[in-house]
Length: 247
Ligand code: MF3
Ligand code: CO
Image 1 (cartoon, rainbow, N blue to C red):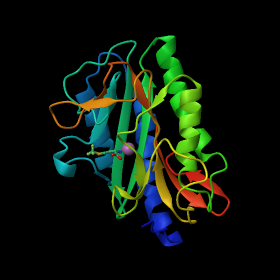
Image 2: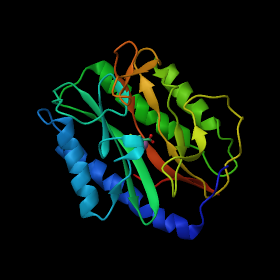
Image 3: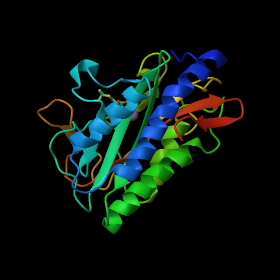
């Protein structure tokens, strides 16, 4: 069941959202070839702690890090380790901060140096999918219009929509109702009430949409080894629009 937030709750949850936003902007300046994915995680942990936030992912069902750092064919939930980021990689970083009793969640995919035209287009289209999804989104819009718009834009550009993972509601819990698929039939699903807070997060693959999870139980890679990108913001639905809180 969707539980819309009160205006007092919204004020509280804006802070973890701002921390996530600022941390991702900082990473945009700092991430570069030669850095390990573990070093990216350390920047995130340090930034959160310096700003009085807890990393929500750390210890979540045993997840061993603060950030998910997913390189190239890794779609989501890449566990930071000694892997060295290289020129030509695309690296998605997905982070969730907990502060004031609420979570804020966002992800970006960074281009490392000169990357192929295909990867560049994949990252651009994945971001565009998010903006297509929130264009015209407001209270009263049916839930699955979000996925319909993401899917139309991704497939219209020759890419595929990962189905094994979805967006979600967020609040006092990292994952709340509803589940927000990145595909769907226009005009269907619950009509979103004002005050709903959603993580809208297109996960788009250059080849097949099928994924497999590695033996670590987390790392999700594309079944064909082709690259995938991820872009996410926490979004507040209001009477007259959709406000990304992590931009
Ligand atoms: N933002 C990711 C999600 O919504 C983060 C998950 S944290 C992890 O699923 F612990 F599951 F990795
Ligand atoms: Co996320």
